[in-house]
Length: 391
Ligand code: APR
Ligand code: PHB
Image (tube, rainbow, N blue to C red; front, side):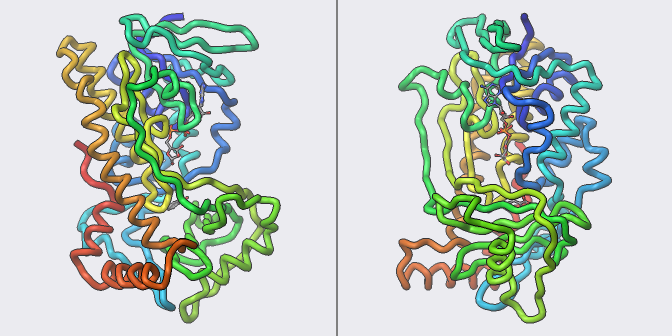
């Protein structure tokens, strides 16, 4: 098999890249290890920056997002027995976020790829990448137990943190920057109307809690839990009790409860490789970088990467040379590293750390007070949260 761009992974990065390339007349084949059903059901984060919304709309895949997505103009930081609103409309006028589940974005992208005759091969895991430092790279993949070879001009590694693309780069070419956190997030999807209009980020001595949503009848919650927590230790009643303890901390707030549809535990990690490319391999999305979800940046970074990569590849195929491709990593990492800092900062601002002494906790409280009373500090949070302009 041969194509122009071989794409490993059908998450948001791989699917959107394939679609954006198609719109520029460039062919691609997407190889995905899992089934279509599995990737469409995988529950992930759900906050889209305006720049992400704009890119999805311009790509013609925004129709359902426009209909069902929830525009939000602020978030609440809840601590010390009170809620404090970060008002986007005042701090960053004209900029907002849209709450729309990542798996809905994935469904929309798969539908658009298939409607346009795009080739997305499910249950076709890549097992090796070859010839990355030649002009004829190839992906070896398996389909129905048979090994096949996909030849291409370039390979886009969009296979997430645990994929095969990043490890295919020979030793010594990538520098890793990373940080592990001493906690994980327990995520819960529940069939109940949200108890809040805007997202609540709650700092609590028992640990962080987040109240988000997916629509008028579906709520999404997260709880900070120990890094080795086992979902079997978290029956639904225990989850609701903990959510109540961490969220019902302001006068008059009562958490509505309902059946739990889905629950799972996600580790928290910060991770970046530099550069995001090697030879004819370009890494995008979680394959190149992971952020803790506190800043809701993961999906948005993946979208920004593939937008930059599409422009660079389109220029290269149009005979404009390889300057933009060569600059791909540097261009992306400016945004990625800003989001790395923001996500780390939001995480340390809102979580409890066993290692923190009384002094550390006092500083954290001081910073929370500052962010919610100083316009300058609140603007820093707001402009990063809604997303800095795309380059
Ligand atoms: N061969 C083919 N596909 C693979 C392989 C492989 N060897 N290994 C992994 N994959 C697939 C995964 O099954 C997954 O569908 O690659 C895809 C990667 O998708 P994501 O993990 O969703 O990563 P990405 O597309 O970069 O999306 C960005 O933003 O909100 C965050 O972490 C969240 O997934 C999200 C990310
Ligand atoms: C979500 O709705 O899943 C969500 C919202 C905000 C975050 C992380 C996840 O910071």
